[in-house]
Amino acid sequence: MAKHLLIADDDSNIRSLLRLVMTGEGYHVLEARDGLEALSLLAENPVDLAIIDIMMPKLDGLELCEQIRQHYDIPIIMLTAREQLKDKEQGYLRGTDDYITKPFEPMELLFRIKALFRRYSRVSSDRIRLGGVIIDIINYEIIAGDTVLLLPLKEFELLAQLAQYPGRLFSREELITLVWGADYMGDSRTVDVHIKRLRERFADYREDFTIQTVRGIGYKVEVAT
Image (cartoon, rainbow, N blue to C red; front, side, top):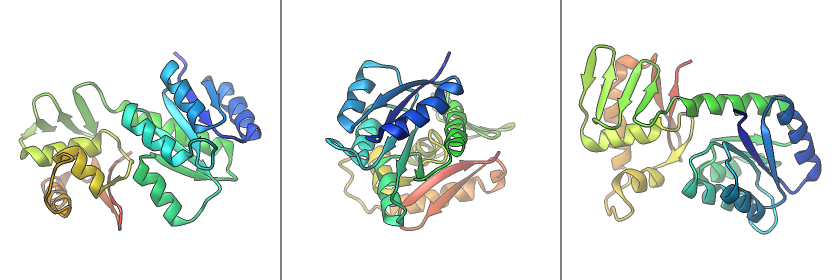
């Protein structure tokens, strides 16, 4: 079955170009001229991945990204002419999975779309696979070859949260909310402590996955290919 892509961009030329490329690859394409129209399409249609521009009327791409991340479990790619690091930081903090600046090669965007679909396909309803390491989210077990690891609860939940979205950057504050809860009153550095422990526990499995630090922002899991 063809996957559905949402393209949200106020530039009709960009939308036309992407529609031509993506339909040629067998994708079904939905188009939105602004952020509000994009939200309406999401509410009424199945969407497997969203490609959104930052500078849009009515609801900009950063706000749209945040809305999508709150209500839908789909990959997000941001398109923008902004190249400054702080703009990319804002995109990742709002929940984007990838970021590509204009002008861009349509085929590069296509490669990134396919890579994101591969990442998301590693997650099933009850198990997450990181190379040869399997996270059993029903039984709260880590299966690595013939070894079954039982982690402290918060370490397990932190790893599972990162592993559900390989390559996606999570801020410390976001991880605190997702793992410890919005009412957590402790120090956000507890995330750093738990990440350190996870790295120590899985030091022998670096060929399967790594937990990477993005300085000043947070963490992400990368799966070996």
